[in-house]
Length: 594
Image (cartoon, rainbow, N blue to C red; front, side, top):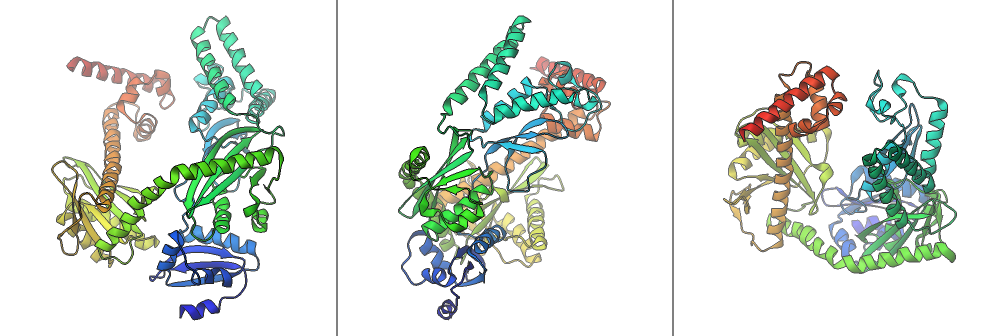
């Protein structure tokens, strides 16, 4: 039947979707010629990840489009919708920070992560900054040097920043148009590459503090100037035209692609990004898919230098002619440098990557065989935590194809405070899967609960009520709180797994991860509860102010160490004084008891 269906595919552009025996889409691709591309999976010998993909294909579907670009865009949208198992590009990637200049209603700076959405009005992005610490330090320094708006919301009165000259008093409209224009000109000038502006401003402030005999502040700014000089010295000027561009080089060997991106901003090399991933479709197709996946999380620069091996018409159309393949000169030298770095990275990291795959995907495949499961693409793990029945919480972590999927993790505050693991497990399982059924989100192939037969029973009872047939197992710990046994939820027998095997280490990693995640949440809840009880008896602090204080300081110790000015940012002056007085007396009392 599959052979007949393959013969009927038209020689037209479009997107194809590979499915497993349960009808789940496990790979989405695109092709200029659907007939040739889909048939290529079955009419030749495959290796690596492609062979593994083909072994799971039970059916396929396709959508014909009017052009290759339409097929390309359709592929991107289908990958976002279905998150297929074998479309692995950038699944664990994160975006780099940018410095964002907000112009209206008042000029303000902050560090932002870029997302491919409609650009918000009056905002300008500068970056990326591969070093997030450097981005935050530059923003803090600019806020210190220039009287930008620093507070959130719209206060009715000027605050301390205005009185020390670090804000123009926007809330009382004390600023002038000339003040704002000059400040904006300086800040944007620096962010666009004029380093002299910032250095001169720092020196001006240092001289002012020195003349006022405020040597401590002058020394602080001298340290900032030294740091800025170190950062700028690392940014070697490579091209004199000051165009923002990225340089993409790649290297392919043994079924893996290594990618090296270099970021050039205002003629300076400000950093880079490396990736390595196995080829699933073919080299050109995977590289074509890589570029839009990467730039869905990063701003597209004015120009992207790229090898002519993957410089296709569809990419040019998608990126609006921003791709360029240099053949000689300084730009070709940059491309060669990126490709050489990609080669070095692959040679250094390939063995580590293969070993990591053995400890993750291969261990996941072996666990699937041991438990006699047809599919094991997703595992949900649960753990409970409480302190003598108080602060009861549960945590869920998710592993997909052997790797943690942290965006799928969930925290649960249990509705009762009792030392009752059985009913805690019932509640969290019901809340998790009843919602999954309502929202039609992805269900796991295996559920692992932290505990033995009691927790398994609780989980299975709820699954039965929800008419869900999902395999359940329990992980028991020994008296040293280490992973000891896997309990089969169907037979309630211990599963024989050698302690030195990759599968046992895989189970240990999963149990440690769910325990870490849950206990961290438990400590956070306890900390907030402790703060809340401290604040209960203080006049002037109600529910909202209590929440604001908890959000700002996070612990009683942080509140004790906060200055009166810092407390006044959250509560009025008289309330801040009462709170500070109470915290100090509380702290002194504790020290006396010691």
